[in-house]
Length: 55
Image (tube, rainbow, N blue to C red; front, side):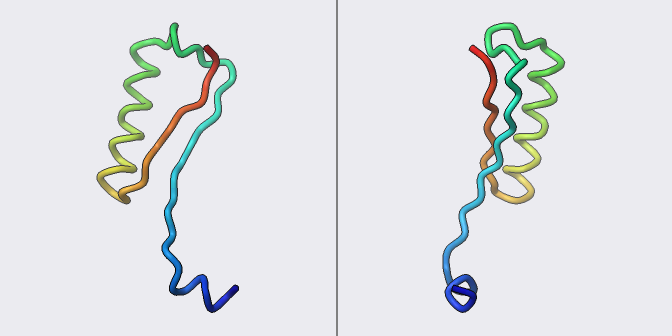
């Protein structure tokens, strides 16, 4: 497994889980912060970013 890890493709994705964050009632400041984080991860590392919150 150690040898295979050196040649295997690695695909990273980052998710944050915030059960108290309402998707429908997220504030403009919360959305701005999340979009900045997403933009940074995509532009700097090419890593997709996702948010899991309440409905």
